[in-house]
Length: 478
Image (cartoon, rainbow, N blue to C red; front, side, top):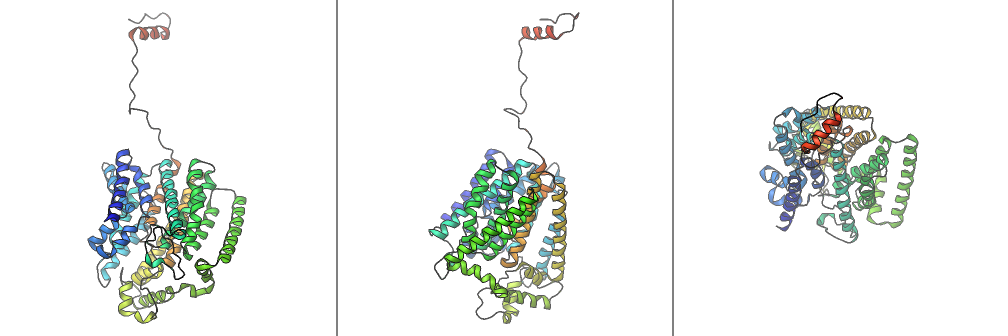
């Protein structure tokens, strides 16, 4: 009950602050700040379940998702007289809607024909992509969102370091390793989810430092986020997260609006830094080094994922066109394909988003995924080329890198369309495409909206009129 009260209090504080400040645009930064708090979602899984009304309630116990729902309501109210603003002219909307539609229709031919929680919440994610850009109108709005990412990364990084080194708030027993270590997850449900968030946010921090130079946002938020984020990323023990960070960091440097010679130097320094870091990790030894060392084992590094991939492949061969239905991978595995999994396997959940989509949606879903990837890649390239300012290119580059990292890591840890930050980044990308990074915030009036005309005494008014009157004109009445 104390956990529930704390989370509800956090949600009330965030939403109350928006109401008190009368600034609905703060809802989008609240989404970014609140999404990492997955603690209560995990703790109430046994009581509320994954689907149905209980699953929907459990989902909204996450402050970020509650803020998403509030964003949709507020945006709809603000645009009630011009509802066309809720349908922005963006190249990203069509692929998002079509893919969500295919995933939702896949429930119709699944074994249970009951939508899992991931499908139940999907309409809210899509609606957020439509609604949020109406609250992201200028550069100030984007800078608030960037600051929210950096603040959230700093907070969860400090907690992750505390979990690893002083044993604070270690709330998931499954993360204790045989050697006595603990894979840090902070407030996320899984260390790999924390690593994914840190990878995209550290890339954002690096791009902000490179593109914006010495500013308050850089000095007070971006640099500290990098300082605490790197050891926190190592504390997660996530191999896919580490590789995703290297990929995101390299692409961010390549796409950053800086000189080519500087990019080459940074890439060289980064390679040297990674080499030194691996050397120090090797000298230290322990479970962290063993996990990194396992990357050299080739296909054996997949571990249980190898058999889960094979099971998904068998499902697709038996149902090549429409698959076994959305959300039916695990049920089909334990009912009809358990012979694929060895006796020592510990999980029956798919960890590869491509295989999950192939097994559950067949060629229909994979074809739609290919269309989405091509359309998003083309849209991202057009936005990046059109943005001439440094800040606009920075945001376009980071959104592209973040989407690529999420897709890359989902091939090892799953959680692609279930990842709420995927949809948040889509919403930001739509706002950037609509020119939010190029628009400076409008100057706010001081005091009242319309400043009253200063009063002038009659004698002073007559003196002014006499001075400004042309020669030969009659004097103004007193």
